[in-house]
Length: 456
Figure 1 (cartoon, rainbow, N blue to C red):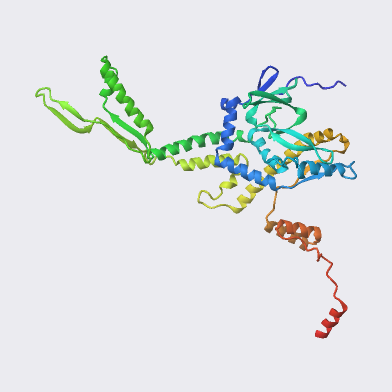
Figure 2: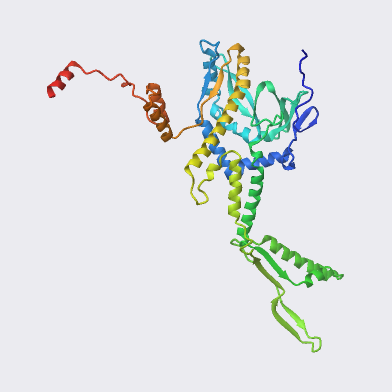
């Protein structure tokens, strides 16, 4: 039986130069190369809806617990405890307490994976006091600074080249020292596919409609019109240089008025205009009309053609939120109220999406970071533990209470200490007292028993 050998490179779009590649696989020119970096930076840093999603998803990620499951061959659980200490509990050099070095800081930075489609973390290490190699910091390589990728013959990334503008040099970070996350696979591309790719169209139109709305507010919700004497256009083409220059200067002044008119504390126009005059050919008498040679006004659209920009912008906002299953954020914002069951279902879908993202992060750490730590410390690879992320799903207390009550009523569930501890935790209640446990009430003394009987 012959071995199957890959016959072609992966099929993502790319341009190659000097042995390195740049991802170039989107049909929209605005989402390629440097333009793509500018667009995603604007979306992630300059939009209130996407900013709220970042805050919400990050907050959920930080509240989910992480645990380490030992390998079956690690009977003493020595290595699982070391990984838990190095990665989760004590990431960062205690002798160099620089900000942004903890596991929670790392989790917050992984959100950029969803924004850009990928993220690369350079793993900085140090020697701990116990002699083991620990993680000093998981340093995010800013996606804006990624210049290109070095790949093998099958298009798989072997190194990332980072341009450092401060010193004007390019640094190469090889795959054996970084952890590479993908938001969603895209034909083997090292840059994956961004969560914002699906939100680009509503974001694009929303941004422009907001600009139009602001211009309308400045200009008085209408289109400025300026009526001037048609003779100016004729004079501007005159063979008389002085006449043509004067007419062009006046036309330029009128054009700037239309462009720059604003409703603010300095609003106002000064227009030098004379009334139209006419000369009787027979008598030579000159008369003046009531119309001036220049008139300014705002033209407002008719009610039938008016567009409610606020409604349209809200629709695009909801469209962006819908791309990440977060449209529940806008329930009730239109003034019509919200639907409780619809909100619960939408929230549940959103949390499932966040859970999937966390599972993807855990899977990447298990495949790349944990083996890296084992190799650096010379530990046996057959004892690799695995990181496990808790659940982001939380049932409502009403639903949970009804579920437990029904099971207990049917005899399918017997309350015990573990169940009580879980229910107390879900409800935010304090834990059991160490002095009083279920089924272990203190016994009355003989004197107390006698006294009780005497009272009866």
